[in-house]
Length: 458
Ligand code: G6P
Image (cartoon, rainbow, N blue to C red; front, side, top):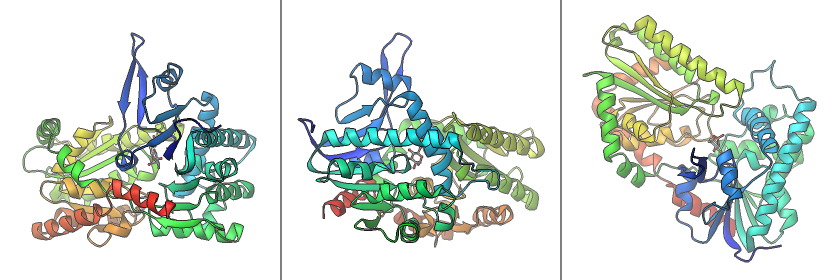
């Protein structure tokens, strides 16, 4: 049954724009999230965001009917969600899309995988059913990411009148790599996304890889149109927010920690295997070894905040990052100089403070759909910063010309790139940084979202 207050624009994503925590006294604390989708959607009226309850606090909010207007949280059974999110989405699909499985040991597709896959299907069906209930006649539905790849296909069956879009925020693997998935699962994923009228990606490269998979495995993309929308940084928001008092305060603290007259190499990431934080630290170590003149004169600010800690590979990786950073500090540090400043809690104001102080930004993912840090630092940095950028980040398509580009596996070359960035002539660095900021903000989040909506309706 279609609900009475049927929405004309719907967005579906695993993680929603708000989350809840249960306080000791039994009341609920709500916290708003950020990111491209949240700012993108702010331009749209009469919309509904369908997302999952991710925590006990979220589930309690659903039970109490506390969820805010414009948001519908789905209380999918916690075990089903865990299998779909941790088991399939983050342990299988994330690794396939980013091409980061450590074959020959991983992956293994066995009975446990099949059991989790059934949960992934159930989870996707729950979303499709909720969207079918909430969408007005002929409404536009924008489904986000690899958690919900099957939703477009199921929703199309339930509501043929809707305009359905799917957006992939991740890379897409070439067909030879994608074929690592069991044949029927690969087909189901492709057909699921092709249930959309339009499937869109962050770069041409990922879109072409998707088309190649569809062509090779299914014989084509059928009636689905394929689009590319390269999400950019939100210049207005970043410039304003990075000048607020809490950011100034954190800059003072950071300045003190770095020490006077020292240069900074800054990175900010979720602690995520695809971000390649450990090789980044090895590269910094190689810089200090190859160019001892930088000892005492540079600090590597690495903010790596926790992510997906239910999964052992993420916990192990987090520990490895800490170990490698500690080792560098033990081997090179002096009484007055800690070479690495690693912080593992999430503090957006502090990240902005680091962006402002950055002489060099290090963005070296093994693979990344886009990478917004690469786009944000040049916009915010006070003195113009040099960007060392992996050619495997989606942002490379737009920023490659003015960045110092590296192969993310090549630790020695990355060390050389860091040295080059630190020694870049200040005028050259300033000019490049301006061009980087202009390219990075070409498609701000609101435009990014409205373009997709227009293309879907057009
Ligand atoms: C990537 C995905 C997003 C996801 C984000 C955070 O950027 O493309 O869909 O929201 O990671 O991951 P999490 O698992 O914490 O939601």
